[in-house]
Length: 153
Image (cartoon, rainbow, N blue to C red; front, side, top):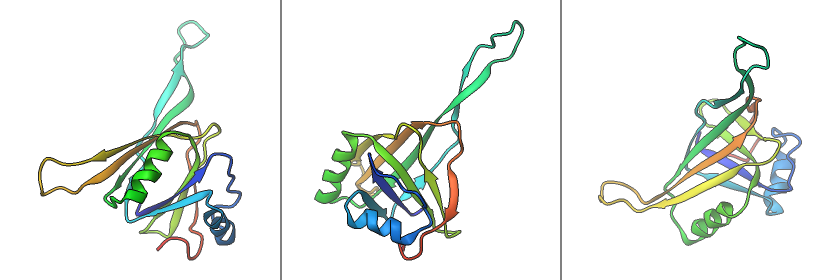
């Protein structure tokens, strides 16, 4: 995945494939497009409870999920953005899969928390970068849609 769109808390994206709706959120400043990145969505971790029945197996009640972002676009503006994201929840993430023209829509019921870090490497054969972890709890697998036309490069 080469780009994501991050939605501010309180925003709603009704149709992730609707370019007009997505562009309106970007223009209003309630969604931010982040391009030229690496973004990954690894397997979640089940949240279980003991069975209420003797000799029963644990019951999966939810899923702890994370996504990771690697962003080598180090600028003062991006420092301000990632610091701001670290201090609040975000509502949703729309991640662009550059090889398929699809997007993954991550929209958990209670929002997404982030941990954004600036990495200044010890060696000069590595890039300065932001490494960000997005965390949320949702039993549902994020939905996939056609990418909104003209939004992602």
